[in-house]
Image (tube, rainbow, N blue to C red; front, side, top):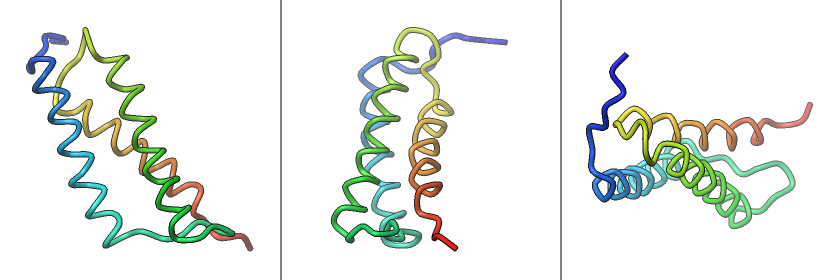
Length: 91
């Protein structure tokens, strides 16, 4: 397995910020659902918090080793997955 970095640290950081912003807007306008017992504003903040937490943790874990485009995708999809898991309605 090839573990060479394909991106510079600054480019990697900018990619994360740009893709996080783009996907947040898409998700918010197409797939967003409020959490049970939370307002729209609170649900939006929780979604943003999940994305920021997963992105920051991913950046620190992958800062030296694996700076590739797939790691950006993995971190963002993890943040959305955590939020989507919380947004299921109660039966």
